[in-house]
Length: 124
Image (cartoon, rainbow, N blue to C red; front, side, top):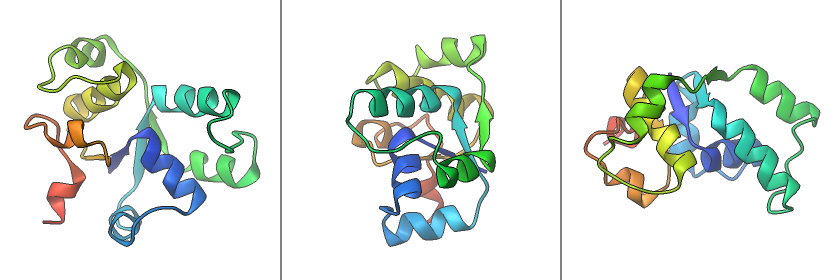
């Protein structure tokens, strides 16, 4: 299983993944932190993306994705990471640490972490 950050999920839904990302995602089930759903809804509300959570394709894609709830353990871990960034990104990364699920992200800050299990490290 892989944990997708918000942007990777959006790239997957809109067909904007790189070939390497597509190959990686094809080989594993997907999961997301619950905060990703909020981020997608908020970005759509603000007009920063044109993804509709009620669109049939989006609903179909999300129905196949495991959603990790934000727990006390994840909240606590988000304050103990070796990188700092957007609070939502920290919760997404902490989800990967707590559940030991590799994170798929393009975020350079998160990718510098030595603590977050990264899916990109699986393909090297």
